[in-house]
Image (cartoon, rainbow, N blue to C red; front, side, top):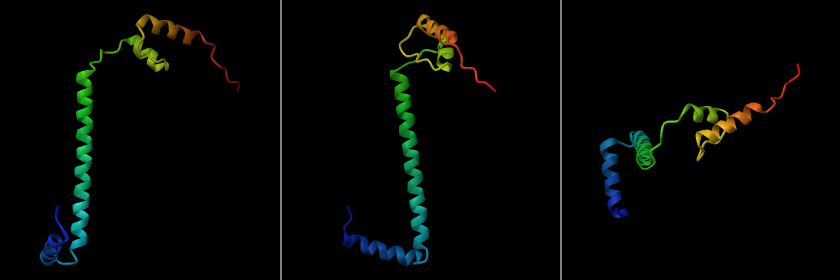
Length: 101
């Protein structure tokens, strides 16, 4: 870590090189570049986690029954296609509310 004694000469050299009027602009550009770096770092960590998850939990492609059940709002986790068909049929048999004009 740099202490106060090291930071003061570094700051003075920066002021001499860039001038006092350029320091706010330099600080802004450094801040925005650090923000971009952190954003890219978070995105890469997220994509790495998704990749690791795809390796550890391979998912089978969804069948048409599973897609239909999901569109109807039925939870498909841990259910067989036969169970999903039963739930789809039950949801189709429910009377729909008729709105009067």
